Structures are given as C-alpha cells and as structure tokens.
Length: 506
Image 1 (tube, rainbow, N blue to C red):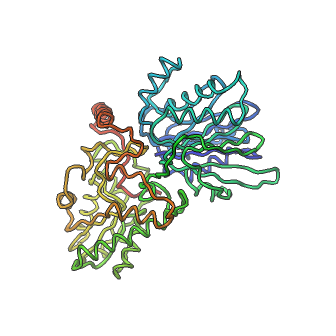
Image 2: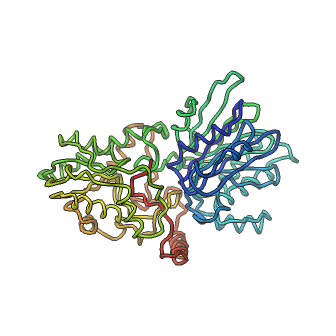
Image 3: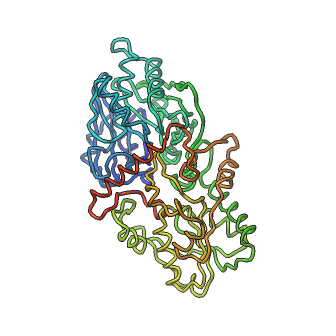
C-alpha cells in the first residue's frame, strides 16, 4: 500500500504536499518523495524513510512551483531496500513525465518484455510503477499528433493504459508543460478522491488516496475518482474528466476499511469509522448466537484500529469496555521487520498492559485482523502474564487465507496462520481460550450498509476470488517464488513485509 497526492494550486505547493504526506504516512513508511514543476522545469527530492526524515529545509526550498505530486511508499513490488525505487519516477520521452502509483500490476513482467521488444523502452528497476510510467509515456506518444497534447489526446492515452495494464492502480502524474493527470483502475480497487479549494486567484485542485488529506489541507471534497476514470487539471487550473475504460466495476478493497485507511477518511462515500463500528455490531451478533454462555468480564481492544469495533461490540453485549493496552508512540516505526524474533520484541516495546484490567478476569481481546498470528500469540501471552484468568480473541475480519496481489504486501500463504488451519487450530496456535472470527458476508454487509450503492468488494485475501480475473495459480506461485527467493537473500531468512496484525500505527 502507498499514499499518493497531486495538486494544482495558485501558490507554492511544497509545504502543502509535505503536510499531505504526513497525513498519509500510515500508508507507507519505507520511502517518500515530492516532485514539483515551475516554468516547465521539474524539481524532485525523494529518499528512504519517514516523511519527516526524508525532507530537510534545503530540500523543501528546492521544490519550487505551484503544482506537483507526492508519494509515500510501502513496497509490494521490487525491493524494500532499493532507494532507486522510491517514487515519483521520471521519464523524459516523449513529453517529460513524473508518476507516482498506489497498487500492484499483475502483468508487470509481461509488460516489461513488451516495453523492451515492442516499445523499445528500458526499465531500470524492479518496480511496477516504472513499468506503468513507461506504458503511459508510450501511449501518449502513440496518441499524440506530433508533439502537441490536449485533453482528448491524454484521455486516449489513459484508455490505452487501461487496455494494456492489469491489476490495481491509482495514479498521479505530471505532464511537463501541461498539467496534472490522475486515474484509477477499471475496478476501483485502490482509493482516489478529488477536492477543490476556491482560492482568491482561482480554483485549486487536490487528488489523494484518502479524504483525510483533503480535510486537513482545507480542500472541499468533490467526489471519488470513478473506476476507469481520468481527471486532468491543466496548469491554468482548468478541470477535465472522462471515463477511459471500456468496462468498469466498482470493487473497492475491503481491507482498506478493516485496517489500511484512517478512521476519519471516506472511501467511495463510505465512512471508515462507521464501517468499523458496524463490524463490532456484527461480531457481537455472532458471539450472541455461537457463544451465548461465554463469560466475559471486559472487552479490550488492541490499539488502535480495532477500537471502534471493540467499543460497539461491548455496547451490544452490554459488557464493560476497558483499555488494557497502552501504546508507546515514541518508539520508531516497526512495520518493516526482518525477523520473527524482532517482530515479537517490537510488540513488547510498543504495547504494555495495564495489569489491573487483566488480573483475575476473563477478557475478550478484539483486533482488526489476524495475519501471521505471531503478534496475536504474543498479545495473548501478555494478557496471561498480566494475570488474566481466561483470554478470548475476536477478529473483526474473517480469516486471512490467501495472498493479496493488488497492493497489500501480505505474506505468502505459508506464512498466513489461517491458510491451512481450522479456527480451532488457530486458537491453539495463538494460545487463546476461544477464537471468534467475523464472517465474510457480515463484513461485506457492514461496509455495504454505510453506502448501499456499493455492492461488490475486492475480498481476495479472505476468499481467494480475484476480481480482475487474470490471477492464475501460476502467477501466485511465481509471486511466492520471488518472495521466497528474497527471503533466502536476507540476513535472517525473512523478507521485509508489513506486519498487518500489529495494530500500532499512528
């Protein structure tokens, strides 16, 4: 997952883009980059690390111009350690393009071969975002008459991208001398929203991964970018949009609502916070029907994203809600952790128990999801060490049984605790006295209830159904082989992957 921003304003945008990246930092902590444009010249600075560490005053001063794009990265393709894969990416032919991308292309290897053999373009990194940039550049060249661009030509090029590219992608791009382009894949898997600000000198436009960026930067929400749609804002501030895909389906990634997005965001007209409250309601209903005689003294969330679900669950079951874990916010981010030992250590560093909330009690711990299970096991043990008499564990999401190939770097199936275990076996693995998972239909209903017009969701990590229709067993095996190969190259035998069930992000 990554965070992207694009803006056309009437005043310098470097601070605006920096502030926006800070708000979207939860979407990627591996690298960050900002590109701006002034008088036909691109300025860019990018590097590995958190936004606050990548940019210094001297870097910000060099980012001149009234329009630009920004990106914070968590790698799902390529290498977590290669600084060359930080975004945005740049290509100078034929028009000069900067591009930043959130998602994952499922036909990136095929496109690389096409780029080299047919389009005569060379890809320098293993990042699928560079592949996407070169596909866009080629389609612009093919669509243009000479070297003149207009809105219809650019939209024709995006249509060409949609025909060639498979997978999930939300994109912001700068076209030198022309303006800001943003578009979303035909399934709308990854989020993208556009807002407007009425400045004294004219309208300003901002596109971002989540609405929270618009809120904090003072932009009014216009709407979500539709699946397959392209939005174009030229450097004079004129706004254009067009549907560029032949067939579309709105199928947002349901894991955005479970974990990835901030609770104060809206995605496709759906409040992330309200969906998490609803998840708690549905989970409580399942407990009532499947475990009616369970004795619980307190419902305790695993900070932070499970709080709304835990609070609503406690309310529905008429049980005390308690804060039993305190998060240390001043320890460095540990999403990218090279080994199981370090992962377990990080839990103890970031979370500490309030012993009196556990001693002698039967507690129900609520988390947003269980992915590897290592963190869940450690948290259950922490509760027991604090004196809990019984420890039950509830997940606001169903079992994660399948790899995600649309922009969430979930582990290989061999690392997913639920891939080949029953609920009872998982319960024993994490050391709990009982385990309750959300049902997938209930999860869909929780999100659908907030916006009934959304009837389809991307849920592949739960049910193995890949909405794009092009994900084969051979492709999944190749992804696992690549990750296992990277694992063998790392110092302690593990890749750097997102520990999704460690819910301690800001």
